[in-house]
Image (tube, rainbow, N blue to C red; front, side, top):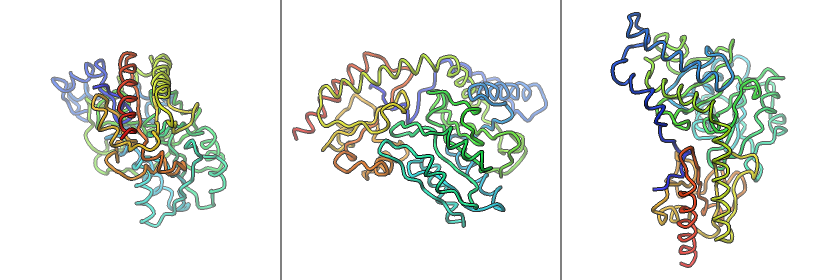
Length: 376
């Protein structure tokens, strides 16, 4: 199989796995224990905190480890909403967010909060002016993703963050897809809260991180003992945390070269398909897009059927969180993509281990099966 679904999940980097293994075997201590086993585990957790902080350009004490990106989104949005309830009840988000954000906002709506869902343009981008126009004296939180998981469009987070900062409104961004692929530096983004997902970063599933700006107090999502400086209860997943730390360290050292390499392969894949096919449309911004993401619509085809035919390629319709749905992607619908193109959308997402040979072979497989489908 040629794996082209890195936005759904990444394989664990072998170097990351090697770093984790001792904490799955003999270094099994509880970080809260005072004896040497616990101290050893605690040091590993704190080293990982430093590694993640270094990647994001923040202080280690601003990093809280979690059970994954969805938990971090829930913690950020609910925690900020609950903590700010005395100031207002209005939240601003966009129509193209991950379900972990949209469904959390939906839950808060049912709990008495008011949510504005901003539109996007044909490339999937939010207009900062729309954010400004949506503000009220009751607005307590803005949550806009950094990069879209389906089409890869990178949002103008710096401007939105500056807008929120100038008005004293909390700002959260889901950076699960962007961390490790493009620079994500908190001094530039002006975010108060930022989500990281380990399994998008060549670390294992079941571990993530949440940046909480120093001095900001939000309500914990999980209550219990005083783990993670009383911000996230539960005995730490030490091996997973070691994994996300090592993955962050690798990303810090290799991101620039990796982005250049994967962008070249992505563009080769796009050109190869376009050279063989007519009526193939790019979904997402042509330039302001993740370097690894290629979402294409094959006019008149059914994307799900095409994926089934391409037995040698692992790709997806869009978000892996609702990839079995036969409905038009909410992201593409929000972008104004019609059914003729929308139902023929397939997302190809490349990664660190994608090779030139795989891309050449993928072009052959995709073009062949798309042409066969058209003939039928």
